[in-house]
Length: 123
Image (cartoon, rainbow, N blue to C red; front, side):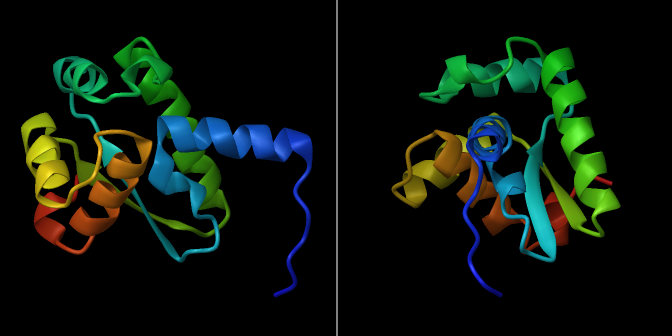
């Protein structure tokens, strides 16, 4: 598949997507993993513990709305989404064990690692 240049608008969109739900930015993959917050408390705890938490939407409702739109968009493009249970304590332990900072890269790697086990899937 030939490499094509990405317009400035698309680049900004991908950057925003990577900040909010980093694992959703791999559009070429047949399966995409994203961490999924089950409630406001776990989402706000993630915002606290992530070094870039201030770049995430301020509220759980805003995060849920944005993420649901992106998931629906990927599903329309025949993608497969694996929603991964977001456990703040497990995330911090995983980051420490894998020498990864608790940031967007860490969230993406955590989601992708947890996507290997159905025990971590959200139904």
